[in-house]
Image 1 (cartoon, rainbow, N blue to C red):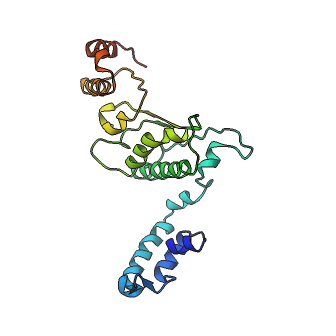
Image 2: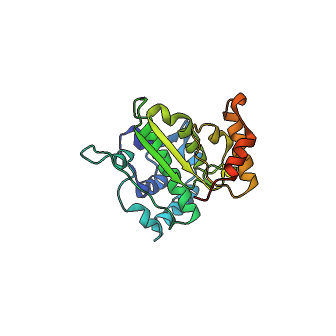
Image 3: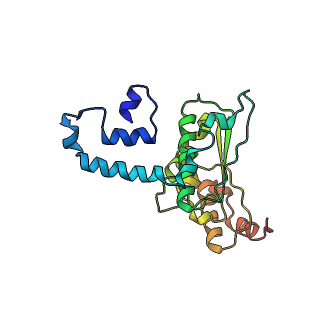
Length: 221
């Protein structure tokens, strides 16, 4: 991929498979390519990728509009556009794959923009549970944390919703300036939210008992 990039050429999966079997260069560093990565091992890798390409389920990922963030945010005439991506029909692995790919594309687009104090775009994720967990490191966690820390400087707002605040990474929560809190079903969730609010609030004005009662008295929805 680096070789194609340096030559200014596009590269797709079929070409990657061909280049794995017959690399367009003879050395990696000062080592001969066949010594660094022997041909039989390259053939195994090429076959593995070919199985993905030959899969009937994977063919669906090769159709549709290109994943270009600028096109999702504006029409060809330059008018603002709302783009909705539904992943409810996908498996858990496919959901993670797509969301991570979408977040990476948004970050790449973001870094090509100039800084601004005006709102340029909004990313909204309905139910972020599992994508920014406290302990695990799924592929989506890093990009989400990057957006929460840096996106505002480029005029991008991030809105995340969840029914399980206890299952969100605390460093992500601490980078979110505005919290909308609805009825919480468990004491654990409520305690986590109160602890987070205590860290963010001015201690002199923080009244945990009042907030505890206020959250407990919220109606559903």
